[in-house]
Picture 1: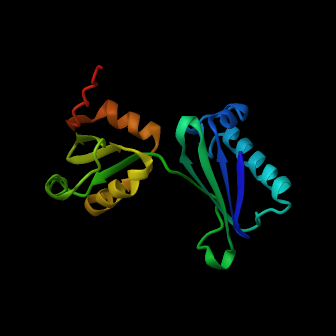
Picture 2: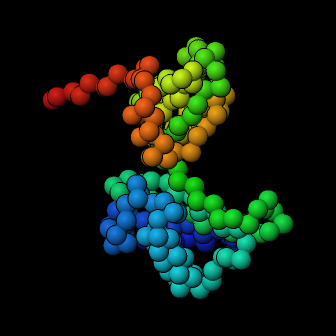
Length: 187
């Protein structure tokens, strides 16, 4: 575990796969609605306070961003936003995965997306249709997320990446297009 104070309002915690196993959680299980996630986050904040000898303000809005790392680890950034800089005083939890889920504003927007969007190599894309609406699910490397996000925001409305909503779409919507599987090479 590596804890770094970025500044007085921000600290980052880098966890290895072993650290995640000791905390008894995986990146995929990180969800602020889950009490185990909250236990892990508050444990990390307490460890940061002990390690650094200081803590960030928890009386302001707290933004928590997570990004997966290699071999089952992750990076968690805690940022305290003072009240005068914050529009609301709620806690925000942002998980940065390689998944993006959006709904196209129209069929024309879907066609424009096909003609103009340039997605990163290796990006898996599935487009769904139901009752006059079109949705897309893209799965890519987290480092390529911004590229896919720009395309999604240009042609549609980004939806929360909720496994429940994705499952409902997979079950109740018709697949219009799915990226062909990349063939595995055998040496």
